[in-house]
Length: 412
Ligand code: ARG
Image: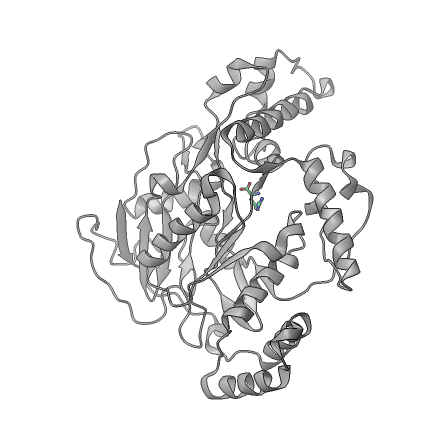
């Protein structure tokens, strides 16, 4: 199902009207030439880019610069434990694509390429950048695949409580889910004043049903998770150029699903039911029933992905890989920024080697940025600030068009 609406303009952020920062561009180009000695001398390129910015307010990365910049943005992601393979990320240069329906279609193609029959590959798809006076497309969702959350009258939620606001927003725009705990949200993309909602095609959104190696009842809980984590709300910032739509993925580490998405009290909150099924004494925190239950959920996640032939790693393996990455970076003469509180896994922290040390905390560019506006859009489903700039090219898909959506009543 596809729904297209026109979003009323919100005030564009001041920074979308200013020129690219020349110093940032030059700093990036110096880094590019330093790490790519075969590319030749930086001087000509820098002179060219300075002139381009002076004339047009912005400049164009070469494909090679874009690829390098995206990979280094991953290398610089202080919260990511999975950076050992940063050089291997596939970069899809789709800067010519900005129209919402086409952006959505290419996001689905991204998911197919990334899933790769279960042998997950790290991929990034880079859509049109912001330019002075003309922002690039925006993806509202914080991941390409996420589950809806439906508020119940008693205040609890069916599905993923994190996305209750987003779900209500897409429902106001005409979307309807099946009403299960794992309904995939539609992808919402805006550009040039047009917003498009598109359901994920079945073949682009692989999932794994969760079973336990020792407990048959676990499958009966009806839990599942999507195979590919693809972040779609972070801006890719390279040399002063912002790519607001640049979804990227790696593969899951089991704890992200088993110790957070399913276990957090404000997410799926499955530990009480799992503990009861396990016959644990839940009468006191001191029996450590949550601790015992969370391990079983994590065993189920790793077991199920492995059985389904879908790449996943455990926190012990991923921790060891990360320290190998830190050592490699050190050897290359580079700092490796890392945020201890994100790197240490959410269970069994001190059982992993990443716990027992500190890290560089300096902030490096190029980078992925989660700004407040995109977080708000992803959680609450409010239009991104810059999305409605430009000339609205409204073409009604009127079989789905709902009256009242043209007057801006839904904008909050
Ligand atoms: N923690 C997020 C989730 O559970 C995904 C973040 C990115 N993770 C990754 N392995 N690349 O969906």
